[in-house]
Amino acid sequence: IADFVRKSRRQLAERRGEVPYHHHTSRRLYLRMSLNERLQHGSLVISFVLLVITGFALRYPDAWWVAWVRNISPLMFEIRGIVHRSAAVVMVLVSLYHLYYIFAVPRGKQLIRDLLPVWQDARDAYGIMRYNLGLSPEKPLLGRFSYIEKAEYWALLWGTIVMSITGVILWFDNTFLNLLTKLWWDVARTVHYYEAWLATLAIVVWHFYFVIFNPDSYPINLAFWKGTMTEEEMAEEHPLELKEIHAREAAEKRADRD
Image 1 (cartoon, helix red, strand yellow):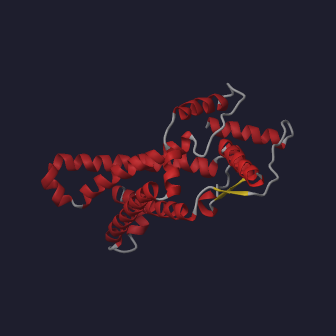
Image 2 (cartoon, one colour):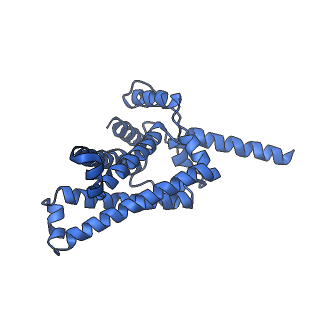
Image 3 (cartoon, one colour):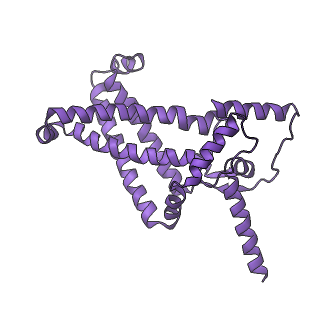
């Protein structure tokens, strides 16, 4: 909320001419997500959405958004189970490929290095909070991945592990009821349910805000689709990375001249 209010007030002030409008006239685009990364992200998005819909449809079969689908055919709930498990398999396969990507592919290795938490993330979070609340005039300069994106990434990693383990236990219920007893099977079901809520709310409240409803991104940040960001977007969201890119390019030009 504080982020939304601060950015909205700044944009309104710029439109009214109360503060200078810093507009980058460069039409250059910067690579944010490679095609490989966009395909991973797309597969994850589709499987996640299907898992959320089909999972909560089982938990809330009488909900208005479930009832009309259920009434189409007596087989709809059997289809729901097939779709849910198929989406789960896709998510696990994408996750396994991602592990290969970050450990074996050079760009993936750099990706995971840039996503590792550092103390600067805590300072940035504190600085952004002060800036959004009007306690500081300076907005912290963020690099390739901010503390927000890092938190989302590691939460997704943890959530995928938890949901995969508990999902397998629920899927092969007869086997695991014998191995774990009914008590621990119920524990797995409870964890699966509440982790599903946590993941859904994290995406809807947290991720959707920053890529859609954030005044600097609205109506949507297209990096997930086109893979690129404009100079203005980079300067606003990843100024340190933009500075590093310019410095690296300047050094390469000097080296070529020498």
